[in-house]
Structures are given as structure tokens and as C-alpha cells.
Amino acid sequence: MDEKEIFITFMRHGRSRADDEQVHEGRYDSPLTDVGRGQVDRRARQWLDAGVRYDQIVASTLARARE
Image (cartoon, rainbow, N blue to C red; front, side, top):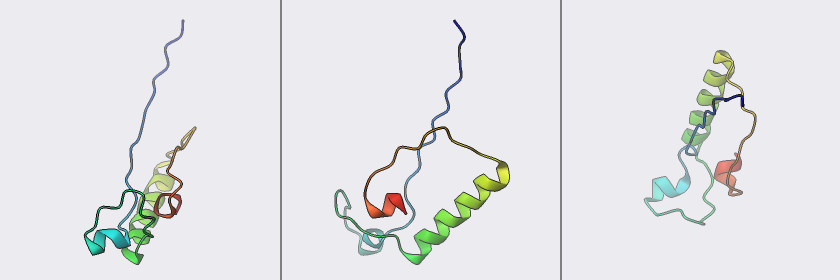
């Protein structure tokens, strides 16, 4: 049997409005802030520049995760 390596990346969404309000988000569908969108954009650019690719992405259905 061939053994394959599996790499799993866990990532939290960027800064959200709930972070600024200092409230526990849970199911509260708090959107990303401009700072959070910038964080996401920088990480995406780093991964693109490094050639990082994923076979599958699993994410929450909340807006901050989809964004």
C-alpha cells in the first residue's frame, strides 16, 4: 500500500467587527473589517507567490469565513 502525506492547514478568518466589539462571535455573522480584508489579501498573495495549492477547502458558511 502506498503511503501519502497529508498536510492540513488551519486558518482563522481575518479581523472581524466582533473582534473590534470584543464579543464572542459563535454564530453571530460578523463581517470582516477593512483590516481583516487586508489580512486575508496579504495571506492570499503570500500563498500565490509561494505556489501553495490546496486539493480541498472546508470552511464555515458564515460571511467572515467565506470572504
